[in-house]
Length: 163
Image (cartoon, rainbow, N blue to C red; front, side, top):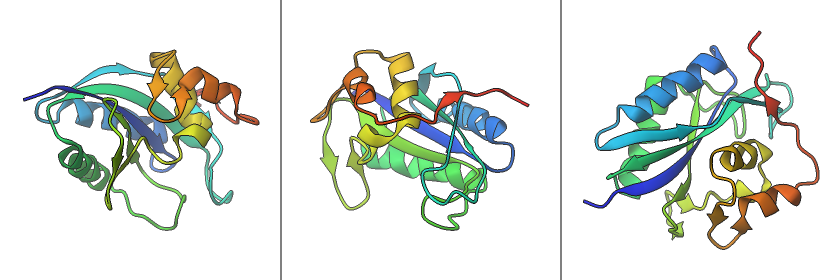
């Protein structure tokens, strides 16, 4: 089986967000035929959606896996469920959110999965940790992560400070 390089975006703003992200790192590393290769530091960010919710803790990690895209998506959704994710509203609060950002250099467009992630170029909480672990990374059809960061109007992301 082929080994794939996949970037995963992680976010949480409920139930101990820092711990939720750390639990998710461990759960990713425990997936069959999968290993976490590198993780960004944790970042604090303002919510993208409704502002009447807590700030998020975000990170990005690089994994290597033999799982195919939809099998990996199913595994990520199982991790979210095991950590108590309940979707209350679009872009709302959550225990954990796991997104496939990039899967090798693939461009995937299906009912269940779009890669690169459709909002990747506009999300500072994804681009900054992505650049931290892979400066100069090329995102298919979008360009270099560093160039995308320079095109952001503003950023509300800062390194996470545990309280």
